[in-house]
Image (cartoon, rainbow, N blue to C red; front, side, top):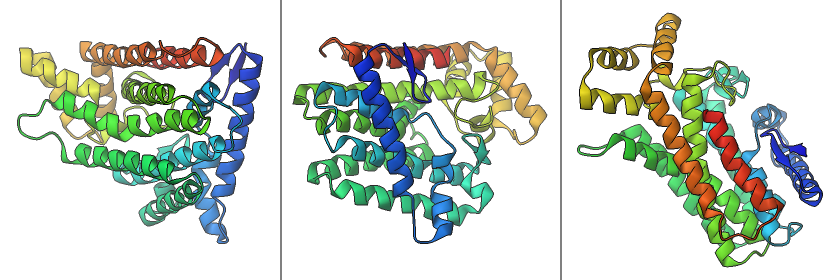
Length: 336
């Protein structure tokens, strides 16, 4: 058994291990090449988060999905680079919107330089991703464009908030499906599609990626509350401090609306207040960690991960299917 990639997936199939390791190494080289510029400062800024590392969850999914066709087909690595570049670009923009100071354990681009540099660097990465994408054909361009539209729509919906009469939890799950699920779905779709897998397999892996991506983000929501050292490199409670109503907070609000217990109302008021003070943030984290709302959010995470796993049923048995199922288990473990 070998651990593959920063995400820590264990692989028991030697041929699969070799393909995945080789593919991820090629993606890493491709990311560094794609973020080079004739202007040294642009290279430094564009490679800031590449060199900070990361799970490379999306390229890993692309490599595994490619196992259902020809895993050595020429479009697989470039498509994985496109997806990861797009993801990295959104991180530059997200950190500006969230006024984040830390990303992946290093100062965020906006903290190291300023907001303008961070936004423009994100745009630079989008441009480079588009350049690579153009060589993968019009179908790939259309798929990426549709996913990017969903990603931006999800971000806008999050910013706007739920409308009158909307269920806040359903609204949030739709946001997550767009912001996170859409691009992870593309990672699975590109891997299968570029490998020449059957269309039915492509559809399965696209749907799997969507569900897994939602579970992955919900696990991050839980970790933002429950973990002392956030796996994404962000400071615990970052979302709470920024006033972002993630799933544990929304589940708490549901309980307040349903029962109105004084202790729930008090915790909700604390979370809705100014959490810029470290002591108040610590109190909010402690309260939410001990509250049933966090367990409800964990169960939501498990539900989406189980849905993703169930979608794998029609796929042929083998190392790749086992590894994809293990990814579902690992997402659940992160939220445990």
